Amino acid sequence: MNKQLNHEQLALSAIKKKLLGKKLNYHEVFGLMDEISHRRLSDVLTTYFVAASFKEGFSDDELYYLTKSMVETGNKISFSGIVADKHSTGGVSGTRTTMIIVPIVAACGFKIPKLSSRAITAAAGTADVMEVLAPVTLTLPKLKSVVEKTNGCVVWNGAMGLAPADDIIIHLEEPLAFESFDKIIVSIMAKKVAVSTNHLILDIPVGPTMKIRHFHDADKVARKFKKLGERFNIHVETDVNETFEPAARGIGPMLEAKDVFNVLEQKRDRPLKLENKALRLAGRLLQMCYKDANINKDGEEEAKKVLFEGKALKKFIEIIKEQGGQPDVSSSSLVMQSHKHEIESNYGGRIHKINNYNINTLARILGSPHDMQAGIYLLKRLDEAVHKKEALMIFYSSDKYRLKEAIDTLLNLPIYEIEK
Image 1 (tube, rainbow, N blue to C red):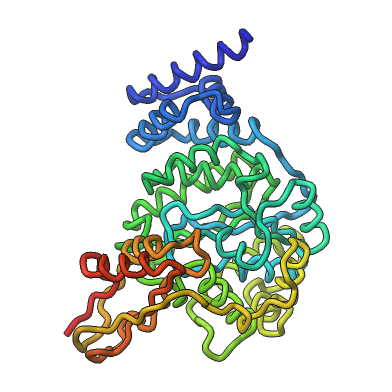
Image 2: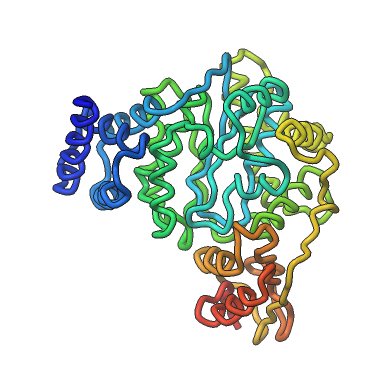
């Protein structure tokens, strides 16, 4: 009882201290995370901490303390040998590289237990998209079994008690639709440490309508990730890339799952930008793994080989089956059956800009990610010509009233900027 009271007092003291802009020590951070993870701290007080952290950020030591204490106040899972992972700072619609990278790396013989989040600010998270294909709420023993049998998995991180304080904080952040850069770093790294990751490729998209808008911010985030990785013996490589539009055309769970299968099945009309990005990231991750395993292979060449020869598709079907999904799933079986509406251009010209923020907002109005059949299909990409009355995109929703609301909202939140 005294210990519980001490942790509660320590947590309150830490929140006050952070609100005043002061730095926290490990004892204070652990007490705070322990209270949050065991749901002994009210949502109001936790929100105060989140808000204070958003304003002031964290020092390198605080980032380490937060990550360490999030891991230590939750469950952990141990894998031996090289354990690979890929993560993105997120916020980019229609860029589901993870679900292509996992089967590529797994098919090359390395473990890649992918814990994925649900969407906070985007139209869908990787877990939301994977749930179209297979259950993502697994127990720890089931997760370990899937990985031991297939080398990989794509599961939701919120049901296994891995870094539980982070999941509670994410739940509170969701209605506000914001995350601080430092919070993103801690959130990602805590999950990696909890599953014994030791090789990580980090995708950091930068652009005017991305989560990270400036390269100087991206460089800071990359440096913090690498520093934190060193303290946990995780080899971190970062891929800072300028991003102006989604890598694929589908936005929303079902549409994004279909794009993934189009790449894995090597369909003629597959999104090549999504394929190329997935191959680049998978290649860099494999190169790290091969180097430390003393294997003389080229990462990107091996990634291309397993994708083009169909080994990645075979591995993904295997993972889906082990997670409890239907093994006969394919791009042709992923059919949109919701209400739909084509959006036409009011005038001709060239696609000059695509607003990712507005894509996310409109997709969520349509019902994504909770409605798997909701979303947006982009018919036009940057720099493409468009004629007057030509279709720009298709809106989908299982709810006709949501569909109408999204159409009306589009007038004030345009996705395309067309240069006449």
